[in-house]
Length: 255
Image 1 (cartoon, helix red, strand yellow):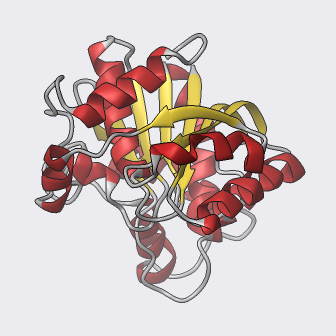
Image 2: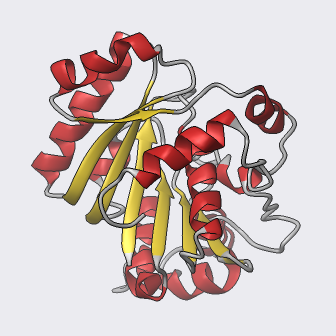
């Protein structure tokens, strides 16, 4: 079982990268796969052709709201996050032919995402060993790292954009990972769709981290994302898919 976390500032193409990575692994028959959408923006399901509501599934945030708001309170002596683990797997896990999917979802009530993240962390710890790969699409901020949704990670991809803030995000993320004690194997910086190729050399200089390659701009991908269609149907000749495949092909070991 390998856990791969993808992060980056909003708009860099990180969720598209996760969806295309899922396509790559499915075609390599590297299944079963668990996709985890930890971003409250909740775009990953759409990008892999899943409608959770139509499938009768709920996000972690929705299940928490039902359990502790609609149904009233908590059970004394039982952590709220642990109380709903069974509900997460029974009512929140979308099960597909090549992959399963969980989403933390959008929180509509006041307060931080601590409880949804804790519930997701506990649920993941209970079942992840049955999957060959776990792909986690992280939110644009860094707070999920402090809450250690995944504390043992094989590969981290940070998708960078064409701005000084993206470079700063990479440096901050790497520092948080070290200081909160997330065990990680390899950390790669990936150029997003808009990242200029002539800035490749700056990655190592300014971050001290490995540069894994760039996701190529692709009108096909942009159109699919804009119209809410799955990226799993992306043709092999797609520049974006070819570039993601090339990135994953050169990563030592699996994938």
